[in-house]
Image 1 (cartoon, one colour):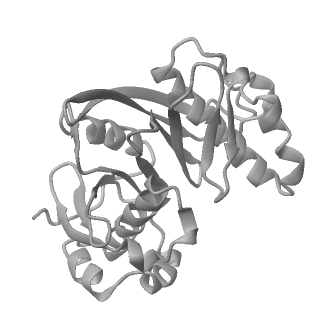
Image 2: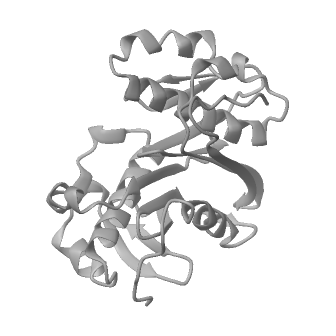
Length: 263
C-alpha cells in the first residue's frame, strides 16, 4: 500500500496481524502504529470522503491527527484485506464520532483508532467481534482530570503501580478502550466503565470490567505512554501474549520503562 510522506522526518511505522478464536471460530485482527513525523495529504492515503473532512478542521494539529489516524487505520486494514487501495477506503465519523469503515472488500471490518501526542495506534477487526484500543501519554498534568474519573476501588488497585501516574493512565486507557469496543465513546459516564481485578504481570496488566463482564482488558506501558486493548471475554489469542509483546516493543520507542510491582 502506498506510504504517506513525512513533511519533516520519516516516522516510525509498523503493523502486525494476529489470530484469535471465539467459540471455535477463527478470526484475524491487526494492529498498526505510527510514531512521529508530520504527514501531509500527498501520500495517496486519504479518500475523497476523508479529504472532504479537512476543511472543517480549523487547526493544523487536528488535520494532522486525522491524517495520521487514517494512515494507521488503513495499514491495519491492509493486513486483513491485502491489496486494498487506500484511496478506495473511507474511515468516516459515525453517530458518536466512532470510526466507520466503508470500502469494497471491507464489508464486516471495523477499526479502533487512538492518538497520544505523536503516537497513533489503530486496530482492525471483524465487526462480529468488536475490540477497542486506546493509547495515552503519561503526564503529571493529567492527574487531576484522571482522578475525577477514577473510583476509590480503582485507586486501591492502582496502588500496585509504584508510579501513580502510570497506574492512573493505565486505568484511563482501559476505560477508553472499553468505550470504543462498545462504540459509545464519551457518551458513557467514565465511572460506568470501571475496571476491576486490575493486576500486573511481566508484560503489562490485565483487568475485568464491573458493569461489562463480557469484556476483558489488557495493556502495556512504558514510563511515558500506556496502551490498552479491550476484547470480548470469549476471545482466545492463538499466540498468547504475543500481541502485547509487539505493542510493548513499539511503545518502547516512545520512552523508557516505568517501575512497577508485579502481582
